[in-house]
Image (cartoon, rainbow, N blue to C red; front, side, top):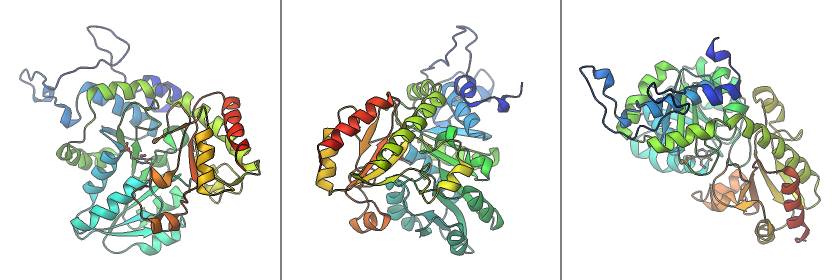
Length: 385
Ligand SMILES: Cc1ncc(COP(=O)(O)O)c(C=O)c1O
């Protein structure tokens, strides 16, 4: 049976697994060793910063299989994955195009670092591929996008971006954290490199910081040496936890998609809610594109209440099951105000121009029973006027 034809839940459990011949353990062992015997064969000379130990390779292969790529790499954080990929392909004198409204840490990185290296950037405040095509210059080397975006769930047409990039011989990189490989496989739509903050859905239990890059063998051959220089490897114990978390990715996402849909519909009809951002809603501007390129709409949604920021905070404080915390993508439902968490590094002007108000609430929907989540939201809404 050809492995690439296996379905997602099977891949989650079996792809990349390594059976230790001596112990016959069904789980990939944690080989807690930074030194490996050479025994006259340089191939044996493994060293974790070279991303080549068994535990690292096993989990990389699983993520790679889920994204439908040729090579995967796990790193110490999502930001390590993003910065390593960008610095692999950008050098002094190059130009790169970025979508506006990316994850706040990515925006902070490109705004504060690229100039120091003589790299030009253009930020596009729209999701219209024509605007990206118009921004292409002779020295443009890559386009970096996110879809759905954090926190406003903007959708960009991946096929169109991939097509225009290949016409101009430009690389495309997507941060696929919000979608997960269960809901969206950008490589199959022509995007060159997929990045994840594995801290979120891939691990799924809010207990590991990690990142991943998946791409072709050819591009990985350029990324790997850079990643080794930067040293942002994932610790072996964290690799094990990530691999364990990934085994349930498919069923977690299925449940999170369902729960988020129920909550989005509930909030969308509620008179105290001004706006819901969730791509399955027919009036979401990216709904048709999301339908055409995603297998599910995901577990993330954002909303604004019809009240001021102070009252919105009262609502969040009143929630009993849904936890107010930074991060997302875990089994537990988590809420936060992006303006003061994920996007805190943005200036007030940037927040305003991107539509991130101080009353915007982001909700990462967990796998709890949805009736309990609705009850929690309903009771918190009932105390605000
Ligand atoms: C969409 C997205 N990309 C990247 C990151 C950065 O990931 P990490 O915190 O694992 O470095 C985050 C973190 O919240 C994120 O939400």
